[in-house]
Image 1 (cartoon, rainbow, N blue to C red):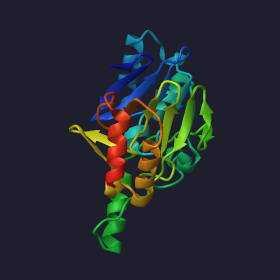
Image 2 (tube, rainbow, N blue to C red):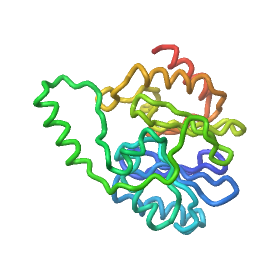
Image 3 (cartoon, one colour):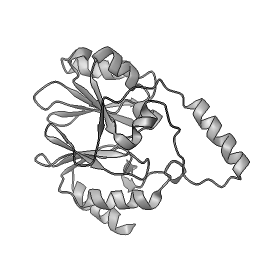
Length: 229
């Protein structure tokens, strides 16, 4: 589905969004859905007139399985360079475990829960070709470090076109904006600070990892939500 000219989203699995950027050159894929969903991305690209090998880069918003689960398959077939914030690179390449938020469990049960999460949410790791930093330019887009949900959560901002892709730094469900879920957010204070940083940017279109994009009064709605935190 076209969000605005040159920006599409693929409803790949559950309600996790994968975006395709067409900025005049080769396509860029933003996020990679759950494992086994590469085919949905390829089919969408085919409808747009592109083969998998046309993809130049894959940008990850963060290292959660529902956003990077198919990244190894996407990268292997396309040969695209993989971009993720440096602080989440170890999640993507499988050398670190995902840190969770606080749970009402004792130490023993917390450990069992963490083991279950690692077992259930398995994925094929991939090497990050370009570990990004806050402020890095990706063509006409800019990396905005928006940590909290993960240490390396990143948003992608196009200042000229006034578009921002925020991953899970914010969600948009049932017409309401929300912060990332506490169970999977190790630093909620930092997540709130990231939302306020996003609210300070000039944008007209806000795209989320979960929920439909906002195109009507997007900045005003995000600012109002940030002020409520």
